[in-house]
Image (tube, rainbow, N blue to C red):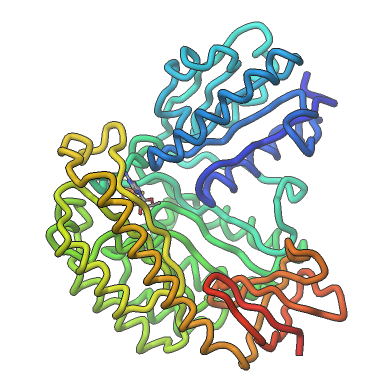
Length: 435
Ligand code: 5AD
Ligand code: SF4
């Protein structure tokens, strides 16, 4: 029985993992288990893992190493979930023999049963699914009461040569639009103001029942009363169409914000990455977006040091940074991943060069962000207040462009939209006061 047992979920990785952890929490709450505030106080410790980069896995392994003590001093049940579980399976049990279970992302519905049995036998469950499985989510299991993640598809058919995701999440599976709508209506009725639609490649979405595409999903969700802002992540540039840009521009509730992973500014590297677009095509899409929505906030992912990347290739990435002026970037040193095609190429860019390129990229981006943010000082921004800020006294929220805004307010405005006069900024956040 799980009734009365306490559990703690430690989540590593992307928003989809965060949403998966909310699903897992729902499953356990339904069985009568209760959330604990730390692993030290819990009967069940679940670690939801990320395999996307070598560094994520190293970080996880050192976390798992530290859990050994927990196992020795108390009788906690410890299970490893997520993409690392899917990828390493029994190998994890060999390396960390005190783990009780290893469960991949497609097997969470059997987790309660596994946890009930784990005292008696160790379990490894990682089978892939071909179709979407609906796992309901309880509001109590959500991390925010204001902004909610809603997964609409999972998996990826793209096989970018550096990427492990097609081998952890499997092929694309689409959630029926009916179920998406039902969840968003339910969220609206509980007072949520924003939804963030999730999927590895949301633009390739097709409703398995009606064939409706992603623009149709956006239009239908925009009809839900109470939901004011709609965002989505991630879009693949090759599947991002002019129709999508027009929908973003014309449907009022869709935030003028887009995460469009570039990965590299060099056509030669893009080809080796199997990205299926050129820098010119990427730039053309950015042009559409900027001309339809001059206020759009763009963010991206960039990998430096992909096999054979030269200084010239890297300069082409730097050039696009100058041209596009992203509000935010996520940048990484290339690391070879299991099963990926690039892992069979020689990882020939020296580690020092990768580090040095990453620093140059991040330093220049920091300046760009500061320049962009300074232009907002003195302006009023509509902000959705998500709660108190980490620094106390202040509140924290996000602008339509998804910038972090810390601000003063006389009233508790959690869960509400407020107009904030921006009085200052750093490269990574804005601050101000409710005007
Ligand atoms: N090495 C470095 N970065 C990677 N990413 C994915 N795979 C790798 C890898 N092998 C980055 C990409 C992707 C983001 C989620 O992680 O930029 O968009
Ligand atoms: Fe990985 Fe490419 Fe699929 Fe994104 S689109 S999950 S980078 S294979």
